[in-house]
Image 1 (cartoon, rainbow, N blue to C red):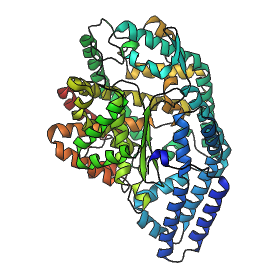
Image 2: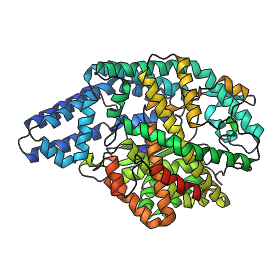
Image 3: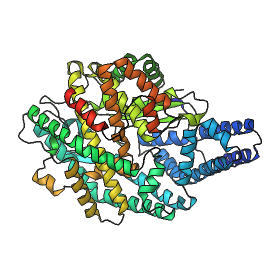
Image 4: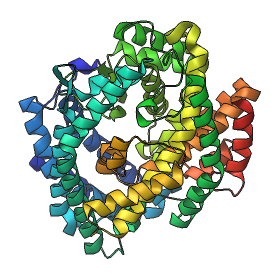
Length: 555
């Protein structure tokens, strides 16, 4: 079914609760393994019944000012935590069932571990706080999606400035950059107020559940299985030791390439004196090239992209009132992925389709899994699917950029290094903030400024930028919407670079390794899935050193 044909009708709490109560009764009445299998199937049907909630989220994000879907989303924000309580009750009954061994065998040991982890990270006492948290997140989305900027005598959407911020003309990108920053400064007070409320709300959730801080609770919610906070801390220290020098040398190389005496923040998005590569055509052109790109990667991805594009399972147009950024989700009732993006006329058009396309490809591979829990995954797995796909797509960038395909590949590889630093900085920032939820707004800015020096000591700032030093974090959606997700990007980027290294040695072997990793997800933890694919664990003591040696040779 096409996306625009998918019907929407509100799922009320009352009908969802009735379906769950019937499910509880079936589970408690189960007297044999056949009954238990029927319970799992009944649960699948209930999950499909809730698909309109996912449809609403997407359609609300397509225009946050649409009063109908705004109202529907507000309703789901209110009942969402109560639905979560029903879901957790089901899994608690399943885990405590006399047939729990059968359930573990059927859904798989990994999925069962995720169930137990989810139960440990939930308590019904926090439902009012979760409802409050949802309202804060909706307020954040409304604020950012409607952001405007004063630029060249017009009041324009802030997101529309991206292209000029990457202009080859330094005066143009400086003007666009400062217009964007002024827009962020207009909202900074409210953004900091929202974040302060979110931090205190999440700290209170952790306190009510008996955790020392939200850090520990977040590790359960993010399903960190197979590694612990100490492993992540050691990983961040490795990043500082091995990647900061590489990033500094890349920054210096870019400065020379651009022919500039100094690189300031408004130069951060530009990699070539003639400007970054941009697509050779419009939205329709980029979608057509996306189809050709995935067809060229492999037979599997060719079938996948036809499935997506022929059914209109995407929204890529940029427009006022649309939620910023991009993501991939799925509609369980139709067993389909969906890509949400904002084509801004920059290289982002190609990047976002390769990245979110990687997420969608995993959903597509698992769409016919009979036991749905065997398709479950954790965030660092998901981002490895996406970031590795970026590298498999890279050899085909001439489709989008013509003779500048190699420029895109060079830029993409350089940005990969900076991204690891940036995500580790966010992760450490969040750990420090949530360990000390009582910090003032200025103290939070001071923490970010200190970490900026740890991860990006080579950055330079103008006098105007110095006045706002430490305030960049307010522009990062993940800090508000998805706490502690950042480290998943960093871990995944390290794994994606390993796939890139393998591609340079044996492209077909690298692709088969990628497929092996995808198929292992849903049945194995992140470290176990890496081992299945023959990849080195990012937490291994010398993994980053070995990878950086290859990367410097490649660059």
